[in-house]
Amino acid sequence: MRKVERFMKEKGLEVGDYVRIIEKENGNTSVYEGIVMNPYELSSGETLTLKLDNGYNIGILVDQILSVEIIEKAAPKEELQFEEVFPKKPGLPSVAIIGTGGTIASRIDYKTGAVHAAFTAEELAKAVPEIFEIANITPKLLFNIMSEDMRPEYWIKIAHEVAGMLNNGEDGVVIAHGTDTMAYTASALSFMLRDLGKPVILVGSQRSSDRPSSDAAMNLICSVRMATADFGEVAIVMHGETGDTYCLAHRGTKARKMHTSRRDAFRSINDIPLARIWPEGKIEFLRSDYRRRTESEVWVDDEMEERVALVKAFPGIQPEVIDFFVDKGYRGLVIEGTGLGHVPTYLIDSIKRATEEGLSVCMTSQCLYGRVNLNVYSTGRRLLKAGVIPCEDMLPETAYVKLMWVLGHTDDPKEVREMMLTNYAGEITPYTRFDTFLR
Image (cartoon, rainbow, N blue to C red; front, side, top):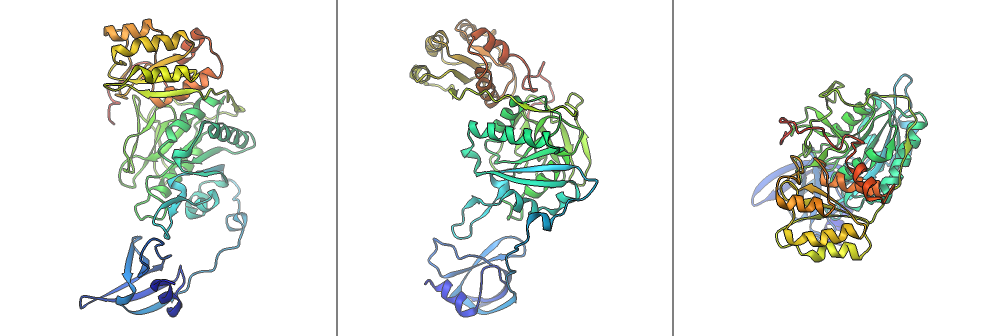
C-alpha cells in the first residue's frame, strides 16, 4: 500500500469526500478545500489529489499535511432510474440524444490523468439539466468511442438509428460525437438521410466535461435548441467564439475543425454558417436557403463503397502512392491537390492508369478556401484529359465521403462524374462568396 492510500485509510478519507486541508511547506501554511480524488496511479504515491472549487486539481504531499477535516462525506451512488430523475413534461418537444463518445462524453480518469470516453448519454444528459427545460430528452448510448475510432460502418448504424427515432415521433436528434472526425460523420449523414425533414445535430466539445473551461454544456444546450427549431438538415453546432456567448450551426457538408484546441474551432468553409444560437433560446438564421422542418418520413440510403482513399499531394510524392491503390483494388481516390487542384506532373501517368483501370479520381484543394479549376494551367488540363473529376469547392473530407456514397450506387464513370458534380446536400456552392474567407 502506498503512502497516500495509508494516509487516506488512517484519516477515514474516501474518494468524493469534501475536505479542508491545512498544509505547511517551507514554513508557509496554506488551506485548501476540495473533493478527494483517486490517487494518480502512475505517481510515487505520496500525493493527495484534491479537486478545488474552481475546478482545478492540486496535489499535496501527505508529509506536509498538518490536519484534515472532513466537511462532507461523499454522497452514496444514485440508484434511481433515468425516467425517475427526469420525468417527461407535457407540451415540450421530444429530442433524442445519441451518445457515440468523444470529449463531450468524456471525463478525466484521475487514476491515470488521461481523458476517457466515460459518460453514457444518460450521464451526459444528467450533467446538463437545463436541456430538460427545453425538450423531453430520450438518451441512447450507441457507441462509446473516441473520434479517431469512427468508421464508415458506424456512420450507417448512426443513420439508421437517427431515421428510426425521427420516424417514431422524435422532433429532432442530437448526436454527441468527438470533434476530430465529426465533419466526416456529418457529411455521411447528409448524403445518407434522404427526405430528411427534421433537425439532426452533431455536437462535441473541445474540453472534457469536468474541466472548468469546458464548452460541453453550452454546446449541448444550443444543440437541443437547434434540434427543436424550424429546420430540417444535418448540422454541426459548436461554440461560435471563445467566450460563452453563442454557438454556430454549420451545414454538415461545409464544416471543418480548424483549430486543435480553441472552443470555436469549427468554421463553415466557402460558406456562411446556417444560424447563431444563444443558450437562452434565441436562434438567428444567417441565411434563407436552409431546409425547413417537414413531416416527411426519412429513409436511409446507405450504399457505401469503403474502398476509397484520400491522398494529399506534396513535393516529392511518388507515383507508387497512386499505383498502390490501383493494385490493391480500390474503387475511388480523392486527391487534395495544391492550389487550384494540381499534382506534380510526373504523377499524371499513374493517375491516367488509375482512371483507365476503373478508379474514379476526384480533385479537391488543400487550400480549403476557393474552388478547384483545372482549366487555368496546363497541369490541370492534363489532369482533366486523364479523367480527373474537379470537385468545385467541396472540402476534401466531404468529397471523400461523397465518393464513397456515389460509388455505392454506380461504377459507370459518366454517372460517377455526374453525381459528384450534383449538389445533393449543400456540399457545392454555386459561386464563391467574398465574405466566407476565414470567418
